[in-house]
Length: 291
Image 1: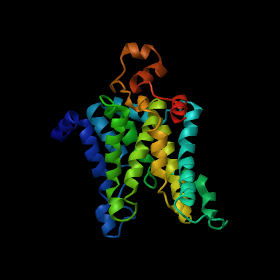
Image 2: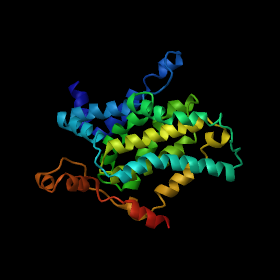
Image 3: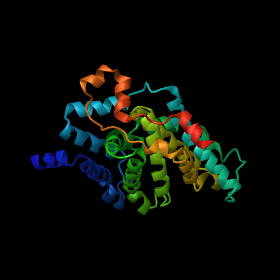
Image 4: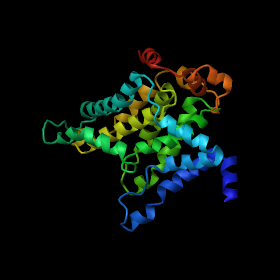
């Protein structure tokens, strides 16, 4: 046991990734035997983060992550981005599928009836760990992303995390529960999640809400006809919105993720948080880059 703890302390980030996979993929055998509806436990990365933090930082590290899960004072505009961006991207993708890719538009009220349950679906996915993907976020964004950004640009850190996150879904791809094309979608969305996370001053709550809304709206659209079920237009739109904002935003390095010094704490919670996560690009910079 002491050897494992020592190993985690020497290689915390690698240990997290290994544990995130191990604690998430264990239902594969039960799925193959027909005893589990899914091959993945979605909150595995969260559990992995708690294990690594307990081994490396003890109670302080665990409590710090839990506090960022409920950090809600981040500005209303980032709540709007988190909740509306997935809707806009998915709707725009549906429009592209009709206009450019020849998908059949639906005009049937019955076919669109599934959209009326969005609010209850959103609540269920958010409040019940395991049935949605939002509870992955304390691990991917809450633990791994700040540490990846310690000595890397936000873009490079996002690409690394995006690849790890995409292939974490491998059992879903193999069993047909997800499409292989979602690999590109996941990597691209990782960049967008980083932008939101950094601007929200490291609030895990914001990315949990964004992930949950993405799953909710995508799931609702997947119940619809071809125009809504196809997501072929989404990757290009997400790349445009996330990467097209200019190299200045994602090329900027952030400072090391470490416990705040007394001098930093003296500057106030908001100032200290900005020192930790860098000075991210906001909506004004995004608008200027897109026009």
